[in-house]
Length: 256
Length: 363
Image (cartoon, rainbow over all chains, first blue to last red; front, side, top):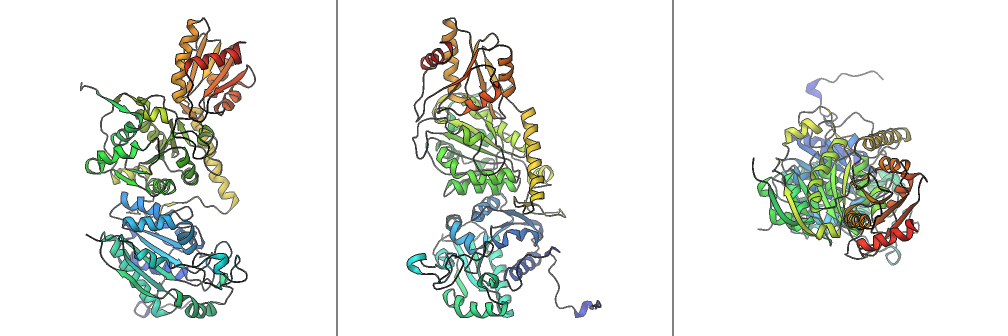
């Protein structure tokens, strides 16, 4: 294919400066790449490249540190918010955020997440909720919907057998230390733009010392769901979004 | 010369003071008997108002060790303290800290186990401290204080060694040393390192924000390619060999002409020094070797004692026989090696140690 040189004045889009050249391991259709891009753009636009400490989880996004060009700490499974708590307290002028999936955050990392939020740590959690464990091959997660088929719920999630899913963001929003809690998605261009604004608002909220922020991104895992990317977007709209409705859940200040 | 600052304090309390004095940046802990005075003392001292040190009560030991991991990954001088069941919960974090080659200090003020056990003193965590305490091939650098002064001194020493080798250091105390009051000489207040100093000293690895660095720093222990993970393991093992060659610390008490040797650490060693004196009065040529570093273990001095004709060794521990395995490895069958211990928080006295020596080795 012949290379076409685009004139600067015609350039409307480019790879964000802080996204590295490493080839991403994410499946085509997965939401992670889009959210990574938004984070990289916001960090660059806010001039925070030099003062960002990011914490990656265990799960599909364990390798996030290969893709966004800032300092990273790779946390043990579920422990990201504890790791971030110390990093932020010891570096109070830095932007410290965690990037976690629903298995990492809502199952094994519940305690660390809730207590970081309850203490009002000035950190941000980007919470990718695709209702499944992607990395380990599509098992049930705490946010898996009732009836949803996964590797460990082959006949569909049954409340009597597997328990009920829960709304993490709504629960966190009850905590005094959590001040900006929002649920977004990146499955349409309009949603991508909204999600970017939410990430920026969360970063600003934490840098202002206004406590804990969480941006939940309802996301697709077309491989885990065994769908094409297009089918996955449609299924997410019809099934996940009614259970996890989009929009701001809490915008407040810390109690006096 | 300024007068020495001498205090009368509990072992646990001096851990807190020593941390502040040596310029520690952060303490993260969770209450557990018999070491809760560490965090209580820190909260009373309010070092965030004097040196800027962060002190935070976490929601669990799982969280506190991961806070230590987070702080250490940014190049800061951070620590935690706990007691046996709490340290079990930290096993995962210790493995990650070792794998990422992060310096930090962990204090284990041991209590009787297994399980919830008791709050009375024990040395039942020797295996955990020296042989395991997490998955994978790794070691902690383990220091065993036998006095309140050593509780104080080993905080600074532990941090120095941890940073020298980029390894987690463990101060393996017990409820007796933690709770007893003794005279302690304080050291002068050292300043905390500035962010510029940290960037200079730890800039090649600390994930503290890129600043003006071109390359990002990443603290990770994930290497999916076997060849890459083996490179990390080879590097760790080379470091352990270096530590074994350079950092063995121990103390000898009346060993020069000894025909029999007690091997004991921490509070057991205090008791055994009285046993040695009692034995000498009875004409028994007994000596005491006290390992100060449990990892690296003083294999060589013990081996040399066996080679020069010591007739027998008794490892005296507040457990069912753990360090005795290392004593056997050191002696290599050149002389009888036996063990005496009590468990469950029961503490032996010098007389019962001497009695055991007579039964086990002098019969």
